[in-house]
Amino acid sequence: MQTNTVPPAPRASTEGATFQTAYGSRTFPPFDLARLLRTVFQPRAGERVAVLIDLPDPRAMRDFAFLNDPKLTIQAHAYRDFYQALQNRVLAELNLQGGEMFAFEATGGSNLDLPDVAFDAAGNERSLARDIYPNYDLILCISTYSATAPLTAFAKQYGFRGATLHGVNDTILQSGLAVDYEEVSVEAEALRRGLTRADAVEIDYAYAGQPYTLRLLLGGQEAQKSHGLCRGGPDVANLPAGEVYYVPIGAEGQFPHRYEDGTISLLTAKGGYVVGVDLLAGNEATVAPHRAKLLGDPAAGFLGELGFGTQRLPVSGRDIQDEKILGTFHIATGRSDHLGGHITPPKFLDRKNATHDDILFSPTKTPEIRVRQVRWERDGRTEVLIEDYVPSAYLLGLVEK
Image 1 (cartoon, helix red, strand yellow):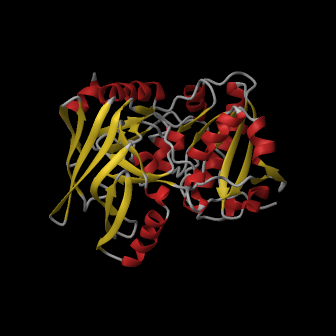
Image 2 (image 1 turned 135 degrees about the vertical axis):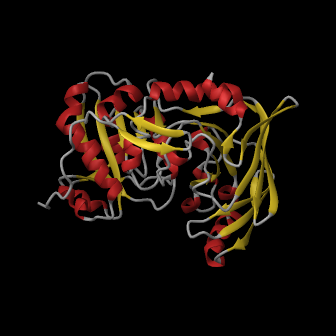
């Protein structure tokens, strides 16, 4: 058996963590998996829970051998803060059953369909569709890449509830997963009510002194919310939560896009799709594959989401939390079926392109890109929502009601 290099999960401590946020210092209660599961799911006695992770080689699940790879920090958190916590305390505290952990091969992209083959800690090969999805009531997926879209589809097919927690790190555990999701839900609903039935949202950007504007057409649709509660029928929560979002019906204009290496491109949208990707600064070799994907596979270039953060959280360095911070927003390209949109995997020319890719705009993720103003429009009325990443009095008023 491989040596376990991760210490056992401690019981919930009596001291929380204090972080600096854009809204001042905030102290969070200690992370407690039992409290999180109780709040998010309101689980019933006897329900079965499973933990899923992704690995470059899922055979390393055997005897938890992956724990010896220091690069697999997300999976180490899954083992220590979820699997061990379940086994040591939480199953008994909530009167749940199971608590097993399974690994599948990492997909390599956000919201790509999951492979069916998985492995358990004894090294046995399992089928997710045959052995896992039908036999567990609650499934927690702690992975490198988001699995919200495929797991949402499987939840509706097999009847489970779940949560996707990709990219978990210490900051997320101590802040975004330690909050009271009853309060998050109330705040998200207040923002949703204030922003619903928009006709359009218009965003003014500036990069290197040049102005650009993107107009997203929303058609008066009901705004939706990601609020962290998953208590009813089959569904999957995306945690940390705290977001109000739309699935645009059209998009026109241009907006700058920052890549991980600092390269900046300009995306041009027409009819709801990206029709141009041009280098503004940095490395053309970074832009070229992105251009080929968006222009060569039209479904990949569909602007399928506009989301606004609702929470006062610290920056974590992971988009899953940082896009939930009030004053930030994100646009996504590609797959949208998990949000109620019509872009499903079969509509892509290549299934490897069937990702849902968030493009986050925040003062820490995109400091080179100025967001001069974000405007919301409905029935001839216009409200400013954000200026230079600062929420307007109107937006703050919605949250603080």
